[in-house]
Length: 206
Image 1: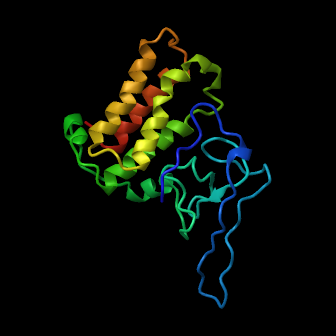
Image 2: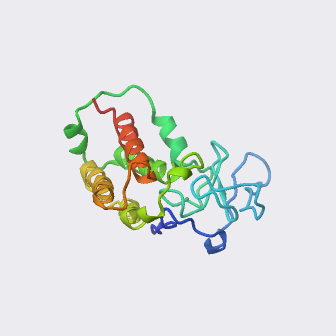
Image 3: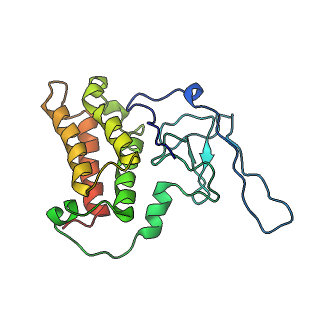
């Protein structure tokens, strides 16, 4: 599937900008296949990433909703059943060998590393909940726009090693901290700390 850049962060994409999504169907052991729930027009369900409704796809594992391009990688609309990145990560959790950070950064971007990096960036986009909004500084937007470029490159599998992805994210945060728009209460500082915490946990960094 061709990777499509999702809504620019932190500006949320309006629901009307999401194109209609194709239907998906389950294959079930009965005489006829039962249709999967189609994207719901109601506002009762919201995308886990942007918090907007309409044209949503359901994760068959956790039953949470996502827009096709808000998810990372983009939702595989023809796959049934389909599981989101968060659920796929839960299935891979287990004991793993602890490594020093240089060893982790030097790893080739195989399927496991790709999934972990997708999880980290998707976590970054999702961790902008209401509890953080009082600390949000709208002037941070331009400094963190590079995250959309990182998302696009990751979707296109443009990183050969883990190091390229992690350095790209850190560079974006460093640029933000160096600007006069940054202060100790802004959302960018909070998200940077969370990203580093998640990175060490996901890759078992010593």
